[in-house]
Amino acid sequence: MQLPVDIKAVVEEAASIDEARRTPLSVSVYVDDTAPGDVQAHVRQAFASASPHARVSLMYLEGRPFAPYAGDDMAVIVAGLDERVGECAKRLREAGVPVMVATTLPELVSDIAQASGHAIPCGDLVAPKAPRDLPAVAADDGDLGAEPYALDAFAAASLSERMGDWVIDACADKRLAFALAFPFVRKPLALEAVNATALQNAGVGLLVIIPGADLPVMTLNQAKMLLQIAAAYGEELGLARVKELAALVGGAFACRAVARQLVAFVPALGWAVKAAIGYTGTQAMGRAAIEYYEGGVTAGRLVDAVARARDRAVQAAASRVTAKAQDAGAAAAVHARDCAVRVAGGMRRAAASRLVRGRR
Image (cartoon, rainbow, N blue to C red; front, side):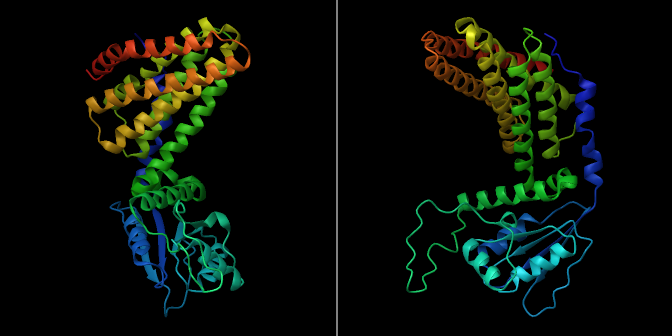
């Protein structure tokens, strides 16, 4: 079966990886000595790069005049209780340098900067997600409550993800170069590609009314998305990679087969079926690709990731359509959901075989 993918267009979409590898980057890391040691170590490690094109300078705020370097692509301040953090961040912004303030003391850092007359913009203050079991803060004894947040594995992953989100937003023109130089930027950049493509494909499924006309567009979008993900992880984009990713896109055909089954049961909701499959199928394929690259590139892992992703997408889309149909009084959608799950299960072996053949 030939995939309806314009390979030339797909390769051109991801060709910027070579340019990104050669793009020079300049980052300054300013460390507040009063910041907790674990967050200092985490940020220093995050900005350690083996790229010969990335220049990273490390400086401490204590006892040194603060002089922003206007040639930086970005700066990060690892913040503690130093009341100069807000002023330093302001001077960096005035020099035209985007600045992230990373901390595990978000409320205290914000309050101190506000009191010093140099408030930190909310979007520039980057911290892990707050622990779910925050203790109560005593209002009359100066208790600092849960801050600093303990930087356990969950908090460290959360901080890295939020740092990566900030970088791709603040440094949009060089986001791919940052992902290639600094691993913590890769997953957020890949997820952005997944989310944007899933929304595009939901729109395609919703608006394209000619039967089958949406498939080539959705598949091309997914192929571009998957090569963008590969680029974010620094994977070479030769012919072998294109074949591998085209095989991965083949998992989307299973989702489209299920969509046709669902439409047969609830034809009045065909628009909802196509939009749901367009969104959830693209999300599933994209997240499978991220799982694939995060865990190491092997054919066996690729087959397993695609199978799991396909089944999740089918069940999620079928459940959504069932809910819509029930609201509209179409009880037959319950049978459609069961049918979709059976179809997906039956396709597992065939999909695995097709993916293995795609590598040959």
